[in-house]
Length: 341
Image 1 (cartoon, rainbow, N blue to C red):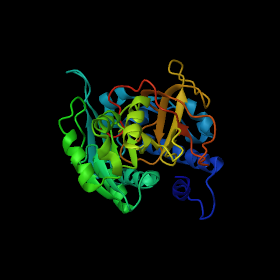
Image 2: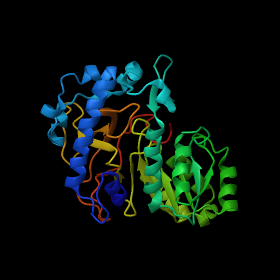
Image 3: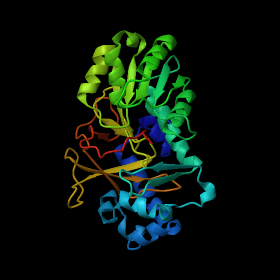
Image 4: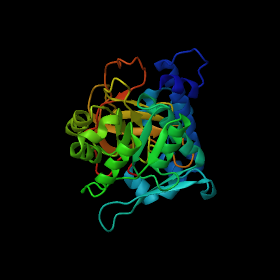
């Protein structure tokens, strides 16, 4: 994704992406995002009242001065986090909470916000598929703007044939036979869906996967057991994706090396912090994942804590990318799947 991100941040053709160029861009976009949020959002006008971008944000290392935001803020004060009038909101995703009294989370997107995700899916999926492939989407895709619908749009830009099916039931295999028949009939070469569901159908019918070359696992924690079941039964290569609805449904995806997930760093600025103190942690240390959106209009998230535990992988990726990689997330908080929304 380096070439794509290089173009997004304004590098001239033929100029390779570097960490200094990317981080200079991130700092500028961070300053713009905070200035915009303070001006247009009642919530951020209060939360960031003590932050002066010229005085307090001279480097990315100054991020520790910015207050965190949390899921409770989204539940309790979500509409006040918005930075655009309702007329400019093209999609609202409602995330129900467990229990009978918990307020739902509602995340707003403009059409331009969703285009950012479509563009990421278009470029991020190039390690898995091309114009010769037929991909089966086992994610919510019926509603316009759902994760499966955005994925379909991104893939079709690259000429991939797409079969939007929908999310499979997690706890039973009532639809597995229908999916297996579809894989055989359409000679499906790639799938995107939840790890539990795809592993279940791979175990049921190894011969159905003779055409499958790749699979992308999303929506929840990906275990080695499920990866082994899919690769062992179908002989395909498994890739991983990390994201949440708040991050725009797309966050980070593995490359052909398949060791960690490269972050879409032109749109998202990730941090790893010590959960109790909130202090930033160096690459290689495990802590809580925090992210800031850099290009979102409707509802930016600034130093947003979601409770997932992860780390930046400390060594450069063998693929040659300069983008940071997230290691596989630990103790993923319930209901945070990038794609389930």
